[in-house]
Image (cartoon, rainbow, N blue to C red; front, side, top):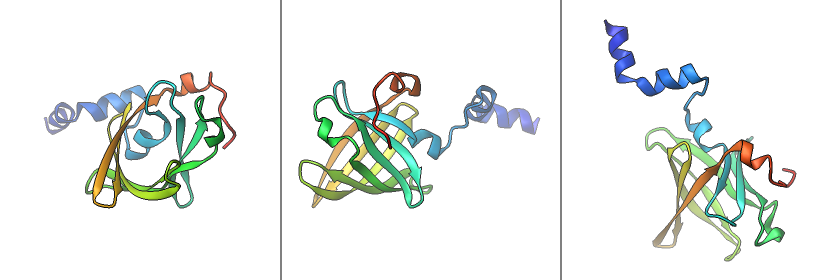
Length: 138
């Protein structure tokens, strides 16, 4: 009876385990992300000092490929969000950021610039789609 109640209350866990995909903070942020069609694709990966995001392809600005744009991302379990720094290519400086990943295919980045905040939304590019794109070595 208790186990049945647990499964009813936690269907996402049961579904995730049955499909072989474990929904964790890490599995939600790792992967390829893009702001919009034609924009750069950023790959988020784990590194020794946290998670980083690197531009792996850009049709509009190929000279930006290889630039680390998200640095030192760390997950805060209390807030359910990631914190780190983003490099602004346009301004040539880093700013503090917070990232939420409310769904497996959505990433909401909030940049803190002085007293202002700017929110930018990204969508996940499936790995199968990314393999068909010429990606830079990372």
